[in-house]
Image (cartoon, rainbow, N blue to C red; front, top):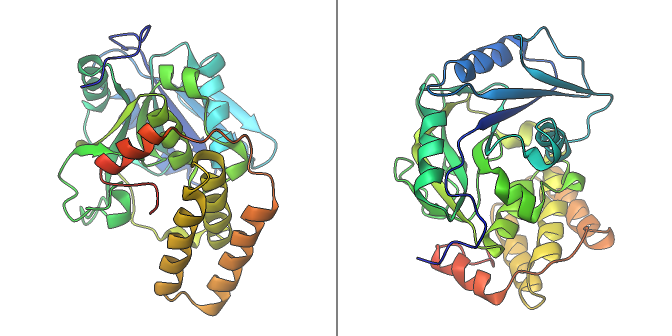
Length: 302
């Protein structure tokens, strides 16, 4: 095991939760907040961000921010981080939870405290997501290539955006989510930066968020954002020789999946946009990080 970088707190214990909402699921939001309030151990502080919408009536003590417009998922979650002070410094751990999710058990926050306390290298935990009616976990919700067994916990190279826990020390070191991504791949951008800084990521099947099964393509911006942000992700984070390899593989995979012509046309437009527009600061990961990703089962060419 690598040495824990100097100055990293050995036991983060104070937990906060960030919930982003567009105000269209008030009943689900209230159920989620109830599940957070029932967590064992010290009280979990909560910040709810209205992303371009007014907030419904919320329980007393919930921190609230109402944004005048929809700024996208990563920017909205970054606002939620700042609700706990600069970089979230008022807490040691931040949970990021979808507003239509539900914590299935009352020990999730305590499991997070325990996991971060035991492993000073651990920076991010990705929860398991399952449909509340069927109990099914979609393959795309297991953040590794070998995703056949969602009940197997493991080290991974990315995490699920609406069902995770982040040590706030990670955010202090590498920054938050990339605002301009708006939707798609923002988690992988943060994950790669965290891994490059020496942190690790775990997928934990025993930390469960119940969430209705939905197709990601329900979002009107899905195909454009997925393609554009994939290019931005590579341009921002990969060593120069790997950028064309990574994007070439994803280009071929997209064609192999035989999307409809309208979807492919939008995807191609997003792919072109990713090359033609600024991607934000470029900080290519170290080759040692490329090797780490490879050893973890996901080399950054796929």
